[in-house]
Image (cartoon, rainbow, N blue to C red; front, side):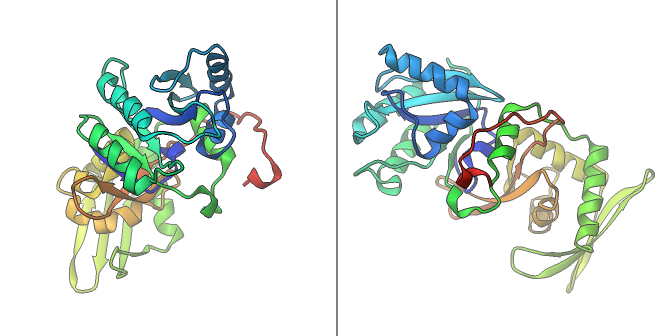
Length: 303
């Protein structure tokens, strides 16, 4: 299944991140420069392979980088040259034929284009044709990192390279109670209509009550909400139609509520062949408390 996600590639729930590269050993700009920054050891190995002539257009190299596996996808020989459609198609077809052999359970690619090969008219249709039929989640991440003032390279580096924490149900309810109190229980649904939330999180009873003018109150106990959060944490990305226990009709409320948690983000998604944009939740696991490593940043990259 091919899913377009309006979110940073480095927040992807996929276990394997694709890095479109050249075979000259250079990761000087764009998303490849960030792969180099977050995974310096992987970059050094990649450059050594290029210097030895062992990484060529049409082949790939799969490596371990922090909490992810990195799939270098050579699409051109030199960083100054333009990629050819047939070269991109050949390497994408290789991935489509070998994903099971390589043990890939989920895959994420960044939006990219080349001189004469636009994303929407050339590259995206090629990816949809080759990777869309695969029985694993394949995420296409469309995201303008320069337009996001809240983006933090240090936070991303911690997420990618440090141990992360699993959230148990007790913490989930504590954090949810804090999030509801922070906004005084006042939210807005997808249609811009306000609704209110009351939450009980005592040792004896946990429940969430949603009220909105003109509609009967909705009361949710801990069981369905625990199931929802557990499913989200395991999947990493959850669209409204994937909500468990009959909660899909309540996604209009639950997505704004859960988005108040520090480790959950609302995102827009598009499933190829399924119509327009869909609302979804993205789980971003928090760090387990390890101290972040030092990052080398230019003055403009310290956000």
